[in-house]
Image (cartoon, rainbow, N blue to C red; front, side, top):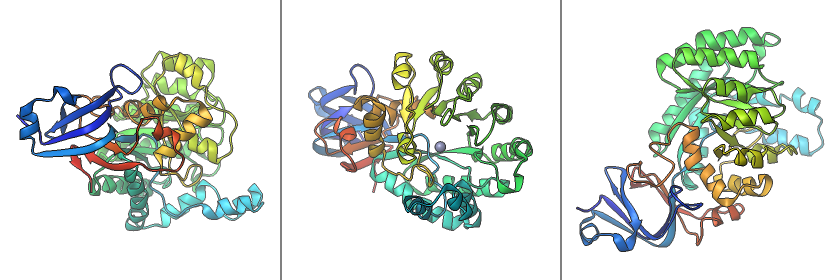
Amino acid sequence: MGFDSLLLDCHLATMAGDGAYGEIRDGALGVRDGRIAWLGPASELTQDALENSAQVLRLNGVWVTPGLIDCHTHLVYADSRAGEFEMRLNGASYAEIARAGGGILNTVKAVREASPDELYVQSLKRARQMMLFGVTTLEIKSGYGLDLDNELKMLRVARRLGESLALKVCPTFLGAHALPPEYRDRPDDYISLVCSEMIPRIAELGLADTVDAFCEHIAFSREQTRRVFEAARAKGLKVKLHAEQLSDQKGAILAIEFGALSCDHLEYIGRDGIEALAGAKTVAVLLPGAFYFLGETQKPPVRALRDAGVPIAISTDCNPGSSPCTSPLLIMNMACVLFGLTPAEALAGFTSNAAKALGLQDELGTLEVGKKADMAIWDITAPAELSYGMGHNPCQMALKHGVVRG
Ligand SMILES: [Zn+2]
């Protein structure tokens, strides 16, 4: 029996099994009903499969990887913050930038003022850029609306992106991202709104399956984060956390207590946090784009995380304030150069471990029989070239559920 699609003349980086990349050189891969039905050395392919497959893609010796998974983005937003960036580099002080309306609240204002269509059109461009780099699954957070209607607007735009593109979108509610101006000096009241109105409504509408928060001295305390997680748990939603980005708030330990899918950033995580991660299934998500863009110096403890056996994912963190980046490959290069990941770890960070960070490891993230046939095809001679290049894009095409994406 043939396949719906058969990939030939290619090498596979399965990101499963033995070896750093799970390589199968001179491989072949068959797709049936949108899932991987067979893969292995091309020499083991049956004559029947060769002769009776509906579509045969001869790939001229390129590499096939799982479709890339970007597991932490704030891709839905309005307006850029390039003006603020330019002011800073022209020597403006932080206070001057704040007076000119800079910072996260600038984006909150722009998102609140944007119509759903405007927000969609602006975000669509970024999603399409990601797709050119072989991204087939994308997590998108809310968190620039900071009131019920505008948070719902952001999540609906995220859902619309997933419906209109050959892209799986995983929406995350991040109401506890920043304190909106109307709740100034009343953070507990805002958290009450998040917990008693926003989370129940979002759960009821099915607009997000995961809840995130920013636990930091400039954002929300551990106790406030706990309240958010309790409200999420009460509605059967999963949790994840922006943790230990600027200081060690012990947020990761709290998140693990709630069975978090991931703890993200982690530059300042302490030994106790690493030990908690080691005993959990929670993924450490590292975000070198924000580290680079903000000129930070405290690096996440990659060696300790690696030694503790913690799965490490990486992500663009695409957002207007600290990581205006839509290139996963540039982030892979940064993860290697700035944080010391190996190229294989960087690719796992956008495939197998990114799938775990979204709870999708049974369906996506590796090339294995039974998984969804989401793949990226690269004009490279070795998988390490994906991390080695700076600002390049060797992605030839991507397949979603076995279908070549236009
Ligand atoms: Zn983030």
